[in-house]
Length: 95
Image 1: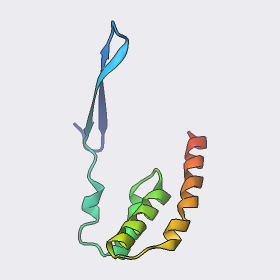
Image 2: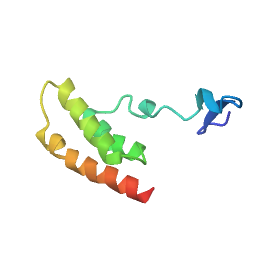
Image 3: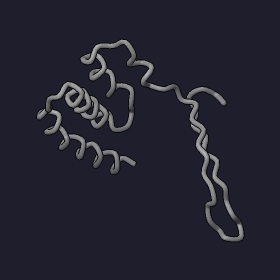
């Protein structure tokens, strides 16, 4: 399988007219390997750039995860949840 592709195989039961199985083969590189050895600040800045969909959500999730791992809260990131809702609406309207 070529790197960077995702293949879906769907089993179909003709007589029952329904899907009977689904298999996913993901040959995309693991983005977490790009984060190894980076500082927490660099990681939080890089995460949103790794994802074309929901980049705001990925960025906020990274910031909230860093805050939780540090034993603190990030009220600014929590406030940005509204931005995530806006992004989700935009994605739905675009598609």
